Length: 398
Image: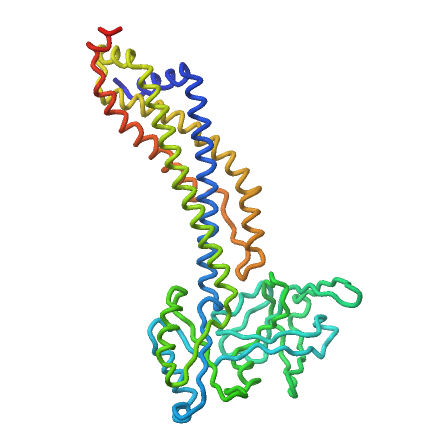
């Protein structure tokens, strides 16, 4: 028997069993839609989690060393060498705290109070306009692309940083005046007034030791998963005056939230797959049970168990393909109109912002494999029942 003929027989069987086929298609379409949306959401969450894990706020520990008998014997560079040599540490550097300053050029930077901040070059935000801050730069600045602020009687204003590229900004830092040339802007999703300047510039504006007699260092872990291990290594040096804490804990809440949402979607995919398997199994079993006489007659006319398995698989495969196409069409509409919009809203104000998801991606392949895996496994189980259909006993009873 040729493959073409068997496909024709399977197609006619689908048409004859219209009610059963429609129910089958609807079940698989709903499953496809739900699983595809779940896989798409998981993709967004995993990308967001990876992006957050690479941010400085989730990798950095603030280490303080108390000045005492031990501290007096070591230099600032010695402490840096010791911290850099710890396991899982990517780098250690002189920490510089953010400085709140006032801008003298009110006509340039409308929000009067701004915050000077800095980070190692690889962790400075990418410039969306102009250029960024490179190693060795001095007295340059990366400003927000836009800042929303209010003045007077709740008057709302929007300040655009791109208009100032190339200009010099004058800031009052305590008793000193700091001038820097604006070279670019960064994506300011949280509408902060942070201005990035070179790390060495911010270090020069502050003493190496704070007023309480502490040295401060930033220690960056190689990966987010090693932060706790690095913290334990530094805690072991507490007898020498070392103390450690996360420099910024805001990113940890985002990571925990994403981890919880990821678990929910993973459970959803698992439960949906189990429900779909049992429904498909039940439908195929009911169909085979109602066609026992037909199956017996086909065996009499020379159809082997392998032929019958292929015919059943082709029939459910045709129905599954129809369910997949319908489910995918609905999923693309719902996912991009509702789910993607919802998740984008959740992460728009985060440190990494939105993550684009292509219309077609591996999630469709994953959904397709799950769907046809369920159909194939169901048919394999039920093929055992087909083997036990003996024409003589079935036709004799009829």
